[in-house]
Image 1: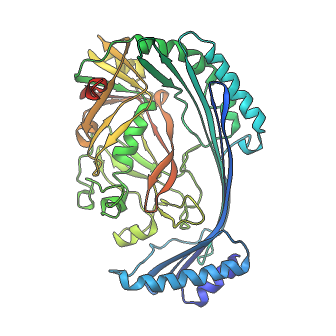
Image 2 (image 1 turned 90 degrees about the vertical axis):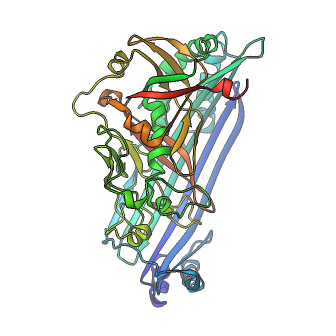
Image 3 (image 1 turned 180 degrees about the vertical axis):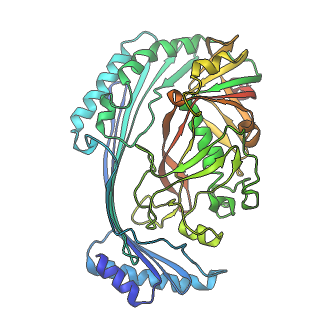
Length: 486
């Protein structure tokens, strides 16, 4: 298939050509109140060919496999490049990338979740559900696991040939309580999705037994907790919540295609425009944010991206100043960067690779750094925020609002019980400039999501965000219940 596709593209005068053959298998198992609700096992297989010819880009894809279909796709991609030529304003160019030869790579896992029988998956989720359903105050339990095995083969005219396997998994349990008066609360596990195998559910990387044992009491306390009084508070934000704030206000804001306006019609632009590179005070001098396609167990970790670029780690914000962007080869070339930093991804063999987010992470403090408890001890009046929930952010990634799973009032440097209905609101730069302290490595967690959306037609990508706990001074807090008119 490689020889047929690349030979056909080369014969047609393509300056660049690549062929991707992929198999993406997705399994979803979900129980509601201990009963199986969903069992899905889906496999997508196909071939995609991308070319650059005479300054125009072309792409073609099919579910058909084999040498003849691959050669036909290459010719279709060349034809597509010809059709798009009249619409371009400037020649389409890819930034240079050397050949990486033959690369074989797999994400680290011990037990492939695809090898675990459905009955075993249902049995474990059922046991978790029964354990929680037998607890006082728990009226409903949802338990699910999503697992993906992504096998990707890529070859291009430069001589790069990459065979990669990524395995990722996301287990989640949520509990709900409803009172006789009609009030209700819910709470879910904090375990993040990860680039691991089934061993994750067996305690390798997260203590599910300990977390599940705590959920009923935490839920009961939340239901009895007072509603927060709106005002200005100092926040200590746990990495189980902060990862999402990083994703929305830094990760998306520093995608260069978005900053240059190419996502405006669908996902919006960015306040962090290229003219501000090197000068924008993004946040506190403590802020050191990196894009990293090499992080252990990262959901966006690869060896070679979907445009043949080797995985890298690179600075985005250093000493609080914007110093870099996330790039694919097309954006890197058009914006005058010498090389892509490996941020191209397609969620299907039938889709064009587009610029997608790396694992964008906030570095912990140098050395041991403060613990979360030490950060809390420095707050006279504040709130400790744990777990992600809903969010809202404007089309320029500047004004935002986030909620969470659990909130604890801080009085005199100590936790004083849960409060409810908290939402924190800020502008991106004000929020990050008010970071007064960053936790040490003991507080660091790699969290993330399976479902980051971008592009037209929309593509969904997995991405991780590592961060420590942080102390942010003087943040506006709303009462979400009052704001909703409840």
